[in-house]
Length: 331
Ligand SMILES: NC(=O)c1ccc[n+]([C@@H]2O[C@H](COP(=O)([O-])OP(=O)(O)OC[C@H]3O[C@@H](n4cnc5c(N)ncnc54)[C@H](O)[C@@H]3O)[C@@H](O)[C@H]2O)c1
Picture 1 (cartoon, protein in one colour):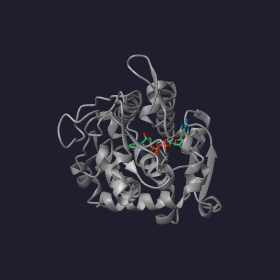
Picture 2 (cartoon, protein in one colour):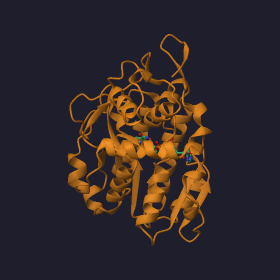
Picture 3 (cartoon, protein in one colour):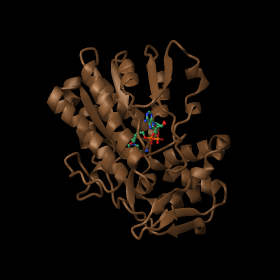
Picture 4 (tube, protein in one colour):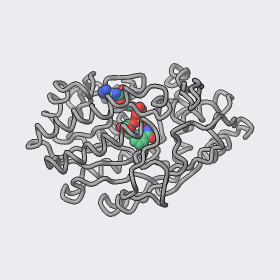
């Protein structure tokens, strides 16, 4: 999401300097930022380092007037086998950023914290609005929930200029193959089975990443008093099951449905997730997103045309988890 946002901001805000901090874990790739941006030293600076590094974060936040905090360990399935890193990066990283924002609050206009809809857990009511109880279901979700509430507490305690965004499921170009949409697309390209956890009935709300970037932009540009201290859902308001998405991908790519294979259920799974878009529309304005089929076609086209991008990370498609009976299984 971060690299898509850098591209978006670079192309739409020609007077701005963009400073990126990324420690480049297995999930981060420098090549996600195109050369035309890298080489534009007047408008782009990249720093390799951790969001948990107090000195580094302070030195960069000091130079900024807007901070957008994406950095996190993000894969639910990975957090099931080993979650320490999730709490270090997602909570202590956010703590580091929030403290830097507090320190340089006088010169900083706004801090946009990228949270996630996973903080809610499965929907207790439909659609899910921002008042929905926070019931994180996985270690990843609980780490992000801690970070989300940490930012809110800093707003209440110190008055930092924070806005919390809670995106629902993302898809689009350059997404890591561990995430479900690119995993399905690349499996279909390779004529390999599309593996689904459980029966595939888990339904999620999907938004094309560029449409998310437009909403982040709207949260940066909205009058501060309108969005200050608010948590805002970023979703489409429509839910689609994982099984339905697998079928749509196979249909778009002219492949048979019997390529779908079901695995045992993944623990920590959220069964139903759908965003209320009311608050986003009220605070950020009406920003139509593209229909899912259109975004999916664009995403398929990107993966078909960028095999060199994903070939080298194919081996990371499947991840080992710890089951409730103590077994290790590939998912
Ligand atoms: N992908 C989704 O569907 C989704 C949905 C809702 C919210 N989010 C949130 O959006 C943000 C971005 O998600 P994504 O899917 O692009 O994640 P990603 O896993 O694809 O990328 C994470 C990035 O963070 C970097 N990073 C990890 N640890 C770091 C550290 N200690 N210091 C600096 N950088 C570090 C990685 O190198 C990588 O570039 C995250 O905060 C995530 O929780 C994602």
